[in-house]
Length: 509
Image (cartoon, rainbow, N blue to C red; front, side):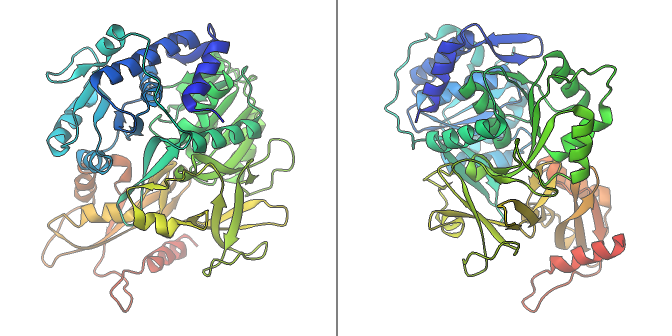
């Protein structure tokens, strides 16, 4: 088993002049990328970054993100990617939880970082990419141009933590999923085998690189096989179709919402997609009608999958060769075991719904970062307990019947209602609040807030939405708000969200 840095070095040696990353009108070969990442590593070490220290990555999709990520990995430090839609309080929490030593960001994002800096006592280095470099920060360009290509190789182990990716918890407190050289390596080789990826493949990435889906299913496999990654700055259906056509993309991964938009914007007269061989879908279960429509119109194999940030990517995936069953998210990829259990941790018979668990080296031995309570709850006896409900059929195919009771997935983005409710409760006019997901044909689900106002108070739906948007990432804010006189409650005063969901379902009938 190789360290990720060794994996990258091998591909760079074998594919020196081959394009590693194609972004807009830029092309970086493996040799060039190796030199740039070596310089990044050297620069970090010269600054004083030590192995194991955490470096935040607050960046959009661009070549410099790739340079930063592998530069951090080569140095032995730990990369902590952060969603660029996050607001200061979200960033501050992650930075302090990891005791971050540095952050790599862009000049247009720096005002957000600046607001965070006084609240992060461990933060020592701020590296900024852009034409204007704020006082007291370090220039990304200068760091790369001045540093040499030689660096001290850390005394690393395959079980060292490479990255920590935060995934919101049902308590509203984000959890840092640790990923090691081993866990990423094992997931990547399974993904490569499942999709039959080779060095001739061109993987098109429009998913944000701060997201585990992009890192595990696109970035790492590309450099493992010595392929080429076509990087798109953000998802726009027309732009993605153009890149797939112009750069002869062979593989694409995205969320169901993305595929719906791609189908809507496809123009066979403009887009030549004969090179597209296989696509993967994750983040939410993809409707069967979308899968069939995509396969018919794009001519590519569509593999629906299921996995978690904790497991570095897919745990199951529809088989490329063999039977792909309707409404199934496939079979376990290599080296992964899946079981379904009841409330007493006993495996249930095939076809019986229970909690989905998986096991394998794609999970980090370190589990969640600095969170013993979550580790005790989610990791038991070597198995990861997902909290998701589903069943296995007689052939070992997995079907998802429900998710964690409160989780909302909108366009592939996870929204945990408790976090949104906590923000709503800070509004001076709100007495009670409950947020649930309601069905949506395009996004899968939309967040809806039910609010009880304090006596004598009044406000508007838009005012509540804007209030939330100003405090957390916009995609987490409710799209709909309904003001009610009361919320259904149980004997202990707990709000019964299932009754709100039942009312939604009744109204749809």
